[in-house]
Image (cartoon, rainbow, N blue to C red; front, top):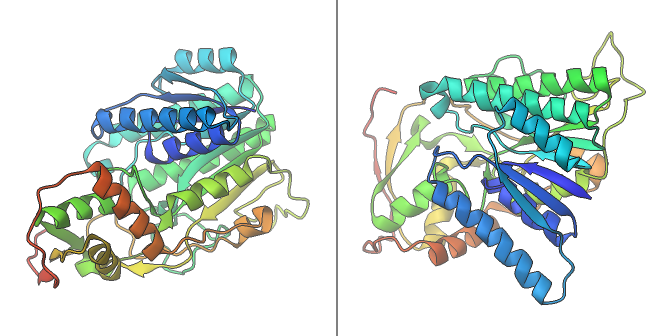
Length: 364
């Protein structure tokens, strides 16, 4: 197939692109290489994907072809021209302005990327029909809901951040286009994704660098948050298994008692999460174990926009694909730390077998 991957230089986008190429698909990737974090990391991910694909090809494995465009999805005409020229069979839409806390500082970036950009992708699929549109949503949509594990059938009416609100809006926008134009679309609610080549603003990279350099790490809500960590390979495996399984109309859907996760339209939602929530203090302990260094911890109050706990019920994913995420946090952090040590050379700090904690507090 020819697969269009947006956000191809992002964390999930690069891993997804690599897997699709190794599976023999041709990939046309787009990214705007913005400076939300260092664009050098984004270019390095693309080079990693190219090197890995070339290495497999040299060793006799049949791999797909990668082409790449630098494009901002908010560019309506540019996106329209891209779809008209490429005519992809499948679209995997992973581009977005990410970050809960950053949405407090720069809300307009979320309007441009997550709403206007997604609308342009939907219009591209409308004008140039595809067999399946898969797009990234987020566990953040569950917001103020404290009933866990989160089920895709749960209401998501109380987002706690603008980022979460834009992801909920994406699901509604996709449904309207599925209803009006018959576009088969699957929304993927990712739960705290981590692994090699991860974003530098996410806790694995922030904490690994700080611990290695002897700097303190900050745990909000005094470290009592729980997160359903999901290793990147499990995310990608779930996604590629869904590609050949576009949703169809749910024959049992009842407009008087509507199921929030399916529809009379070809539209579905899926949770993709590890289904094993871990308290952040325990997560840090595992990171310390693999880094073989103790952490200096500052315990701080709850931050605005933060969700207290995430816990995925991925049974709908299992029913459709026969797969649920399987890599434990211990395994995944071990793989992440091995990659981290090969790609970063932080200033060594004296080994400290026992963590130090501080209850220094500040106003959020």
